[in-house]
Structures are given as C-alpha cells and as structure tokens.
Length: 295
Image (cartoon, rainbow, N blue to C red; front, top):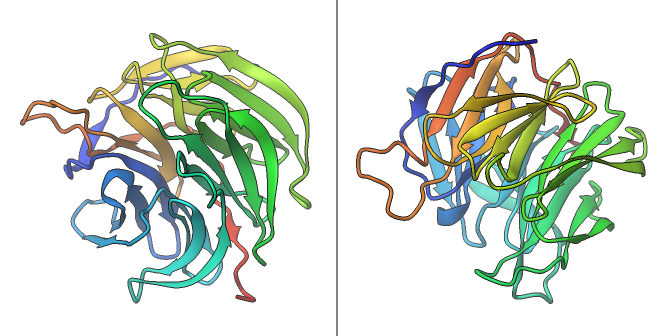
C-alpha cells in the first residue's frame, strides 16, 4: 500500500529523548517518557491536556498494566507506577545491577502479558555487544532471552502475536522471531534486514494489522515501513531530524504518534524533541497489558 504521511506537532515539549509512546484506550490518552530528564508524560491526543512526573531512578520505557498502572523500566529495575497518585507502587525486578555501563532501554508488554525490556551498552565510544533482551513475568521472574546486543530496541508484535520483531540500533539490524503468545517462547530467528546510517538506524518501532513493521530511522530522519519479508516499502520523511519511536493511537488505532529527540545544538526554533502525529490508512496492532492483577 502506497501513501504519504502528513505530520503535525502534537506537543512542542523539546524533550531530550522522548520515547516509548503507548496509547491507553481506557483513558483515551498517550503515555511516553523523556529518558534524558527521567520523566513520565501523559497527554490527550489534542495536546490540550498534559501532565508529567520526574522520577528518581529515571524512566526508560513503559507499558500499560491491567490495573491501570504503568509497568516502567528505570535504569536498572522494573517497577509499577500509578499515574493517579504519581508514585511508584512497587518494584517488580532488578536487572543488570552489577553493570555500571549499561541501562535498560526499549520495553513493551507482549501478547503473553509479560514486560519485554532490553538493555544497552551506555558509553560514548567503543560500544560492545554486552546487552540483552529480557522477559519480565508478572510475578517478577526475569529470563534473559537474547544476548550479544549493543542497543536493544524496536520491539513489536504482529497482530496475531505469532511474530516478534527486535532490533539492535547499533548493529544495525532488525530480526524477526516466531513467538508463542501463550508462553513467550521464541524460535526461528531470522534477519529481517541489515541497515546503515543513511537508510536509518532502527530505533523504536510498531506493527500494523497487515504485518508491516514501522521503524524510526533515527539517523536518517525517516519512518521506515518494512514488509513482513523485509522489503522497504517506504521511507516517510519526518519533520525533525531524529524520530525515536512510532505508535498507533486513537479509538481506531489509525493515528500514528511519533516521539523524537533533541540533538545537541538544535536551533532554537526547531521542534526537535516534540511529539508528532499523522493519520494512517492502516490500523496498528492492538496494545497488550501487563498482567499485574495479583500484584
């Protein structure tokens, strides 16, 4: 399917690193984080109503929970955050506490009701493949599922939950896995595509109901759309240099919301670090919720 996207600035927040947008259909609002400032944000899709909370321990990625809370990845732990009280309710798991040179990064709730979150080697130079992707079960059990990653990113699932997409922003590559939505087991790893700076290093991502994979090409200022077989269908130009993650929002899941980061030295008038939205002719895959009902 060929089409153009027209992006409008929804929120001109000038975030350092806005990331991890997710639409909450129960509240009809968007949640996302600013990794650089350790903040969780909530906004409606008109941009008129906006709240934020700055948290000790940071905010790296998040997902929705069954209770209405958020499952939140901080630097080295996963917690439950209550947006009604603005407080962290409890810690679920600690991850890579022994490593000062890594932090948690992209995370999403999978079709299995678990929180999937990866780490990244956080150094300015000589980044090495010492990071991993983890599955965090609701009771707090942590399982390392993929190793040998530099910067884990790009998590998304097909609409039927049978395929998991995962990328390494510094690989840079995107893989697809066979996924068991009942157990969270992975099998059949296959390289979807290898990328470069010009095409767009793969940052955050989303999948639509047709199985298309939407990847924020953070180094190229584009949203790349890949067919299920890895063919690049289109590279949609983005209004600011560094998009970080798309998500599908709204009751029909046809509002494409994309976060961005603000590069050092950005011009004063630049809206880099803002939240942008465009209408899509295809709906996104449904959002899953962390099964915290017993917590």
